[in-house]
Length: 287
Image (cartoon, rainbow, N blue to C red):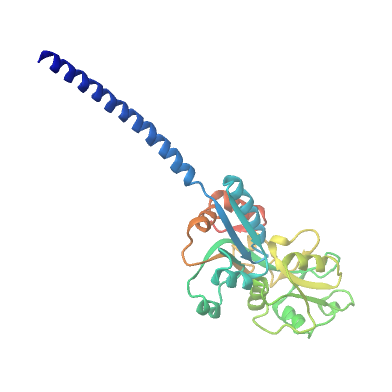
């Protein structure tokens, strides 16, 4: 009987030891599971962004930095204009659309779930070639130029030369803002030369001494000259203090509340680091 009790006691000790060892192993497995979960939660996949050429430099640089932070993420960014960005977001062709204007009522009716996320602030400058002696312009003058009623620079105190008018395509948010806030929605005559991006506008005005056009303040450099408009120069300070009236929000757009990679990317753009990118690209942070 004593022998039986001794054997039973030994079996119980071994069982207890194995059970205790299993608990240690369980902690180890839990740690591994946590590590695996962290790895599993690492961001991965593809994010597509499309639209405004004004917002494009912000989106590209933000995408570059976002991918450095998240090596398993691929962000594809392309232009095409604000209209393209709204449509792409609304139809699910892009995860995020870009627009340098607000969503139009007709677009909202077609895509009622669209949500705008302002990421920066910008102004639209009226620009001429640096060799042009004209330094300022009024709203009435610019309206008459784009209507084809003022056709010679000498009427504005400049050289005796024909005014070569440049405008943007109808998908452009820059055109929309210029049309509404500088032209008061008056007509743009058909002989105006159409260009498809801010970069192309800058190149056109740079290469034409008698040109007039308009582009984002963020694109102004030594190649073009921003005209004083209604008594205010197109500067960041004047946009912020409200003196320069031709201004707008720079928006990213999602179809419904952003989720997954789209939300993570937008959070990054609106973070202090992302807003520094907005500033670096020549625009004004929204935060």
